[in-house]
Image 1: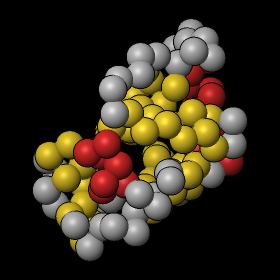
Image 2: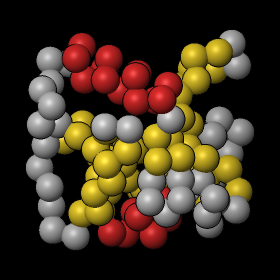
Image 3: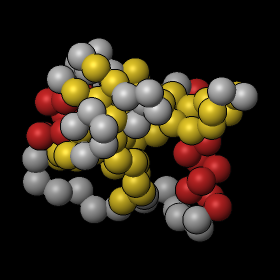
Image 4: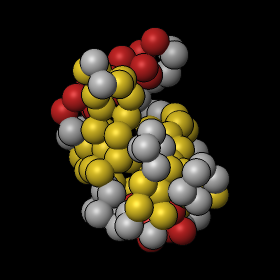
Length: 108
């Protein structure tokens, strides 16, 4: 399962409203090659489910990822920080064995 904190949920809802997207759009979470540690996270709005998508309803937010990404993301919590040490989404990924200094890429 992939979970989301209340702070992340609230920020994503604001972003969706700002973009003029309705409730048919969900959050697509993915892992792609790249970044200084080898793998990086990707977040986007989408409204098309694909074959083999894994769907998680959490805090009234629908998170979707493909099966390959889910193998890297199982047990991950998506959070949002707006503090002095940096703004943005953060992934607490129990599968990551190493992360880069910026927290945007990881290795398993």
